[in-house]
Length: 191
View 1 (cartoon, rainbow, N blue to C red):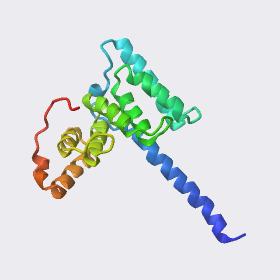
View 2 (view 1 turned 90 degrees about the vertical axis):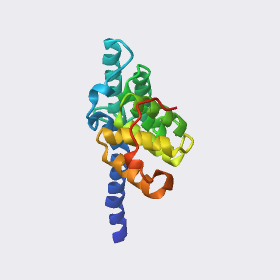
View 3 (view 1 turned 180 degrees about the vertical axis):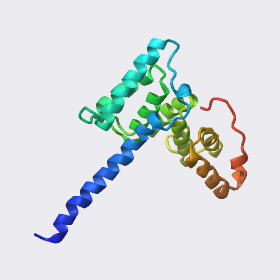
View 4 (view 1 turned 45 degrees about the horizontal axis):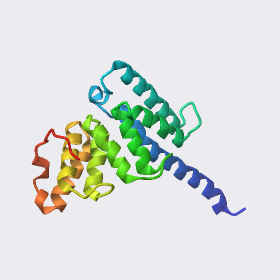
């Protein structure tokens, strides 16, 4: 048997595992990365809605990661949507991830932006960072460096190091934003 055939199996397994980790990591980030959990942990106006939303999001996360259940992105998206409809920021972020990657739902960058915007307004720093990226690249939303900088500032203020790096890149690459790292964070809702 040719040596390259044996080499392909470990390489394919390693690549598959790496791809899975890259796709699963953003879902985990919403659960573990947030230092401002109290801002993210809000849903509607009733404590029962928050409890229900947390449970639904947890089930969705387990379905997405295959944690104790068979991995099923379609089912994960359904649970994330149930939770997001309660206004739960972490679920809104996760549902945005599903739409961004087309996991369990058709890939739709406009819907990803919609859900990340809702989560970003609730203070979910990963959503703020991702939304800034979408505005910077004009994916799912009109390209808007000002909005990109706004969301990256909010994410950076919450401790997202990559958002700070993106602000530095913006300052170096777009002349109008040479002082982007000094742009004050404005607390207002963005379209």
